[in-house]
Length: 280
Image (cartoon, rainbow, N blue to C red; front, top):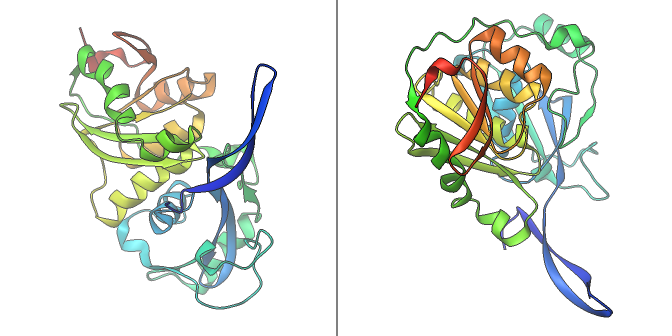
């Protein structure tokens, strides 16, 4: 069994009958991200691709801007007490990031500007001090290519076919990065949609593959503000999802040039922003 799931005891109720059994649950554990051995954030996530998650998270938080800003990302090997204990010390739940060419003054400023919090698996950018600081500082997406509606309609099935842990637990979200022809490039599963996106974007960042101007992002569930923000930062021109976008996600997509589609089910869906990138 992978680290992404845990075996649990359950009582199954079927009508008037009940029986004890075992089941598999999606794993959720805290990941502490440190900057130069200093606590920065604690993220509730599904274990796996922790280095990529940390890279994607720091990119979204604008701690780093390019792959050149990353020095090292490694799991901690010390035995120091940690906010990520969750009842026991697990060193695999702590990663330390060093920034390349980062001055001590810049590090102190970043730590001072951000309050250390536990970011839940349902909240992508809870660590910011003010709502104003959520505003992105990147240019709008300018890609002019288009895809057919038929390609968009195939994305849920193509992503679902790669959700291995969901098959076992029924408890994980997924994000898929697709090429313009609908080919699946990368996939990540997590208890949080935004974590899954961070894992994909972080992996591409570490491969020095950003911006992702020739790609599409598809997520399970709804599309929130932070999902669109992460797409903008990664340079992704089109975001689609199984369910609805939030009003703030729609506003952000319209302002920054991102095509936003929701309720992608069967051969139908809604386009909420920049429909010119999806042709009939």
